[in-house]
Length: 142
Ligand SMILES: [Fe+2]
Ligand SMILES: [Fe+2]
Image (cartoon, rainbow, N blue to C red):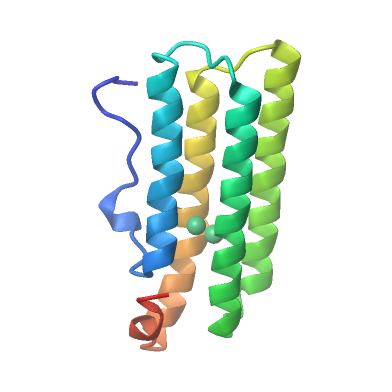
């Protein structure tokens, strides 16, 4: 990874729902701050940082699921399952870091990939649903 190019969510991954987009940016900004603070080498306080990140992600998922519930989204159950799987996988990464005794930039990249995965495979499907029903405007400022 290029130090001069921090992790960034592609513009096409914007949902158009303000709290969801802001939370995605916040999560990625947290990951960038971990990379910057460790000088792109090992992350000393990974337990504290990753635990906080997983909890930030959990709050984000809860917000998404609430918005989806309010929209009567038929894909909510599947999406919520995807969220649980994602959190489970990230907890496994944290466990692995504990076993190893350190975390590195590649672990931060795994966290980033998980966000990308949820946005591209699940969040944007919800946006498609709202657009097909011509209701995105109703959720823009949520
Ligand atoms: Fe999301
Ligand atoms: Fe999601």
